[in-house]
Image (cartoon, rainbow, N blue to C red; front, side, top):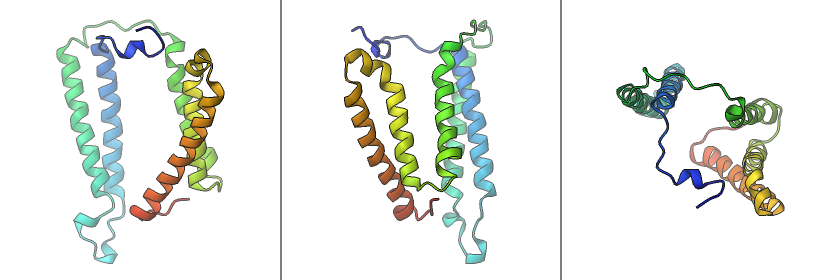
Length: 175
């Protein structure tokens, strides 16, 4: 099977060094999540119990993520991550990461924080993400317009679903 996604089907595994860096990144994120959940208001003035505190679920998820990160780090060290040399830096390999970072920051800083309704900002973000990261594959297949149409539809569905989930199910007021 040849094509843009054929690399997903082979038996190659990420290097132990890549697992080590991913584990360290996940560990840093999980620590930030746990710290953030501990800093959340516990709503004691409303006689809320520890089981209804807003930071409970994010804290538990952060701890589980930390556990998985430690397991990944341990596995990578056992596989020889510390003895491998660093690969040569290729900026093209980090382009997708940079584009993702720009899109996420654009969503948080540009779309949501400037008065745009959350559902619309989410819809734009999801649609742009899909359009950008599927563009090359869609171009090769000759389905660019179809891909854009699907991205817009999925973006709207995701934006409305996210809004409904947080506003009506989790009772979180969104900007």
